[in-house]
Length: 564
Image 1 (cartoon, rainbow, N blue to C red):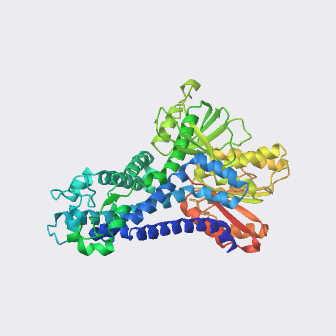
Image 2 (image 1 turned 90 degrees about the vertical axis):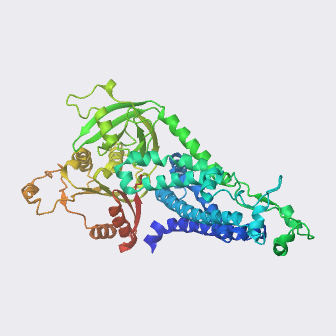
Image 3 (image 1 turned 60 degrees about the vertical axis):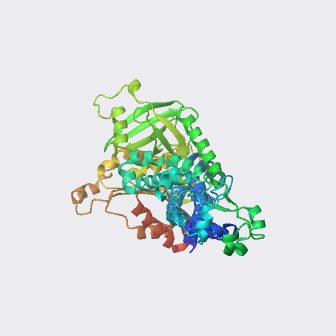
């Protein structure tokens, strides 16, 4: 329970508070529209009125929240402020994308309820207008407002129309259609398979949020949901007068009721977040205009491109990431990449695995397809936004650390391990971390090649300073099994591993995480162990479960995962 509370306690509390606010708003506004002021509106629409307005209130609340988790500069600022007070609270900011998705799902749910309820409302408004029975209260209410300068209740003012025409000729109907279409495109393009395989589709359709918010603010201007005015309630109480509707205006205290639309409220909910997001985009634009110089391009094996860059005033911490734009490829696309350089270096660098159209275009623009290299003046101009904070920033706040990288997911740990190397070269005695366990899982041998030099340097440095116990590393070839690697056995008598050149031998298959966690817990009783992962979701689930269930020797495992 201690591990569960440390890892998930605050997250669950935040989610419960968020769900509680949604539930409160739904129930509260459902009850609000059961008030006598909306008695005659309900006479036409029934409870579909409340079923439409309650989710609308929840939509306002969630649309207020949806932009905040993607304000990267705001999150970095909050992270730095909160971190000094509570590491657990700061870790919640690392789950910003997860919360962003949850809010998106909630918006989709309430939108569906809102639309279904209003489809019933439009049909009932139409039926009330078409009904010729003057002894029908809904029809009489629909006729109110046919005279000049008289307020109306039924927004459908003619019986010569239909709900489809009304939907496309009223502000509420037209903006509702636009909002719904934008939301459908945003959600469907956010599916994992599209986001991973067709990032450009995801990127461009996600910017329909601008259309969504404009439509959202304008949606209530038509004031299509109407209720009895306060002045009218003084001279006409619906509970006393609704049975006398045939004699309204001739009976004392039962004059013809007057109606007015609710003023639009959505803008009050979203104007703050929209302003913050506008400031965020202005900051990003300003940063994108600052000059970035590519000082070195390195073509690593297995189609991995390394860019070393300099930018005036650029300061970073370990594990942070930047967003990169290449105007010659696309004026609009920004892609996140983890920094692989250390704060102590005079440049910052990223490693890019060539897996899509954009990365392939960048690879070609940097001369990756050329055999004779590329002149510096021929290199493309790039824009950089960031750096932004991630979970890995906290790595030196733990006495014992587990770093787990899968494939190119090793990039944030390159920065950490380089920083460790520099700190020990500079004899920095302020390093709180006393032990690092490093695990790197790769499917094939080629992926090791660009990172092996760093590990070899670290290995030599630690040996020279008699600090071999500070860093323990385990490298796994996950698609190899011991039987397939039998021809390497003869080399195991050699001092260095034949694949990586390290003294630590490469392992085959997948780690036994039960054994690894038990071993670390036994070696460090009572310690808080920071577990940092940059890798796929299945691996994250496996490590997350281990962090929750491990309690041997009182060790507490705190799980941190990179999110993009």
